[in-house]
Length: 185
Image 1 (cartoon, helix red, strand yellow):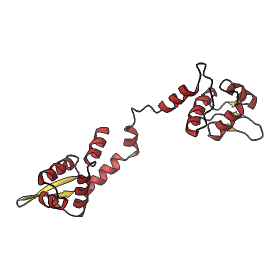
Image 2 (image 1 turned 30 degrees about the vertical axis):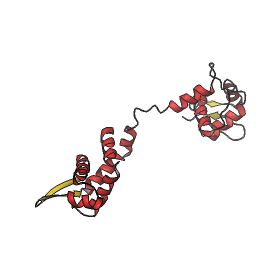
Image 3 (image 1 turned 45 degrees about the vertical axis):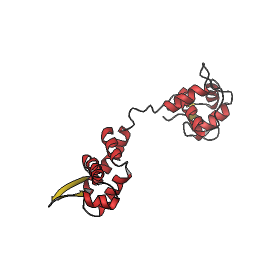
Image 4 (image 1 turned 180 degrees about the vertical axis):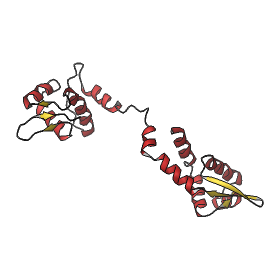
């Protein structure tokens, strides 16, 4: 799928090709007509039309001595739906390491023993560090505040801030009135 996506965007990455699509969306044109309208050489217009034909957006039909080009709006709509589907967008990043940012933050903010050098002030960095810290808690297991503090003290002495931020970012839940804490997922 990514080759199709790249080919589609490469074909549309030229301003003149976009103008050609815009003109063909209004009506069919010959190469010569497009060349005059865009102030380009006919050979240049033919090159652009060839690129657009390769991805199926334009087609030609013979009309006496000329080929008349038209935009295939159904193909454009179908390609747009297909390319921008949730499934295909997700597939385009399958080889990206989604944890790279978190891993870098963990490396930057932790000591060799896994404890934190400092608690990050920036929200994105803090969130990455909290995703690291919350792994110390088992999913759906309830912990007293004392036990939470004991676990968090392995990471940083400011257990109250870590506890508050874990709850604030939704990484842990808490019962009101000093009740239990737990990690849902």
